Length: 53
Image (cartoon, rainbow, N blue to C red; front, side):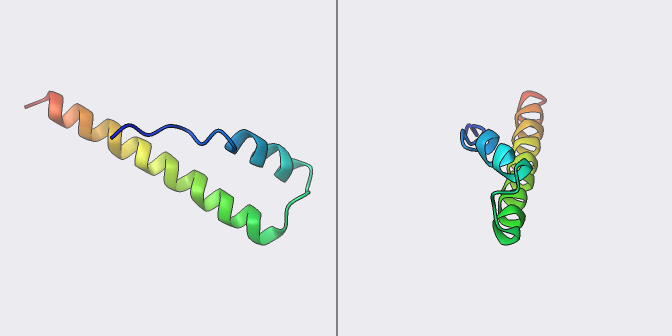
């Protein structure tokens, strides 16, 4: 599985900086961004583990 960074994430971050988003949306999008980072790290670790067999 190949993960790609959500294209809208940069727009979300720009909106958040301009405070155009509600607090609930900011929290939700931040959680999504953190989950994406963790999934990316897990994917990288899995690829390294597969290569080590």
